[in-house]
Image 1 (cartoon, rainbow, N blue to C red):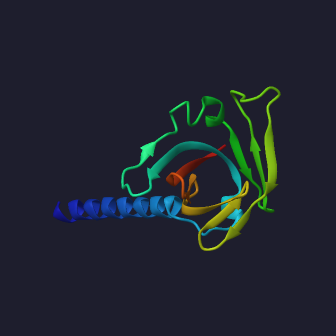
Image 2: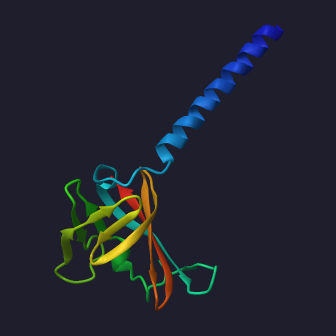
Image 3: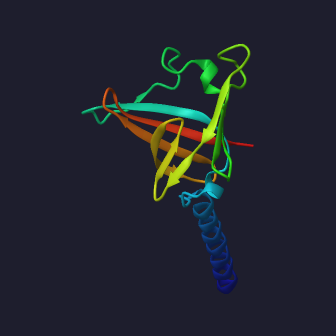
Length: 148
């Protein structure tokens, strides 16, 4: 009876360890490449850490700073270095507007589009966390979540 209990315990430990490794691989940071960044994204978080502070302010759900018509817009990065920002869902203007252009990657962690350079803090299969420093206000951080 002891041998079978030990074998069952080892089996479950191995299964648990194998599953844990898969989660780390799929959720870990990816290399900043056109193929890894390609896809459609929606901004799902936005914070500001004022200059000289260590406390971040969530401004994503404050209408005066991040209106509802911007919260559902879609950023699309193509593998060939083109970028599109589409006014989606609740429109900010009628007819809806957007913009297209090029994006550039500067490894190990710089993404530039829309005339601004962002530091890529995290790139996973499900989101990109980017940030930039503004002399006027402090550190701005955005989370872009991949869409189907």
